[in-house]
Length: 238
Ligand SMILES: [Zn+2]
Image (cartoon, rainbow, N blue to C red; front, side):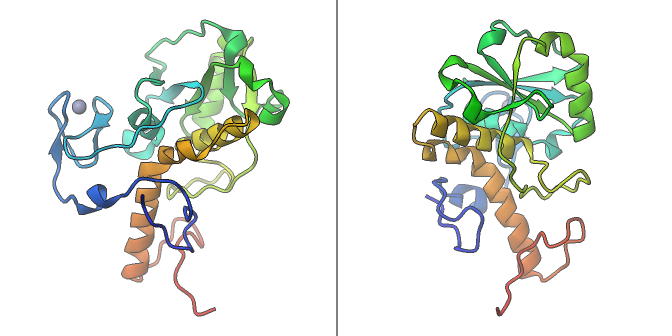
């Protein structure tokens, strides 16, 4: 288990140790396609030989519709695929077609006016969650151009949370990274079903690792992080 500092937003989370990630300096070969990757393979979206990625069992299967112009390096959708490979599918928009076989059992995570909070849903009914991955502008466009497909699907929203993402965006501090949105959805969904939610903390295995690495880099070298005001938690004497 990774020990987070008390000041960390991940303090108390049940996330596996980051030691293997921290200790690697080299790139390693992907078990499947042979490409080199430092932490995982962006090509086949799986682990590289030496990193044992903790697996997460999701309470609902996950389809991610990812805008193909969203760079892999800026997308956290892959974190879900790495943690829950058999339950997660990623479709590239607009190149790859996706179908919604059972719209009455499907939820779309999107804060449209007709979206309902999880507490107002009969969670036993739903078997699949669809998540849109892209910038806010891309996401709105993707929902619009799939309007027909989504028309019979219940939209769902999660409680407002502040993002911990290091990527600069101008929309709002409540605009979450894709993996954060997925994580918070799963927490609320499990709570609504009366099930233990600690089991999904490892969805943030990579996210919390990169978050820490960025925090450490800026605090250790005492350099300013200008992209997001007050993002770096510098030590204070207060
Ligand atoms: Zn690969």
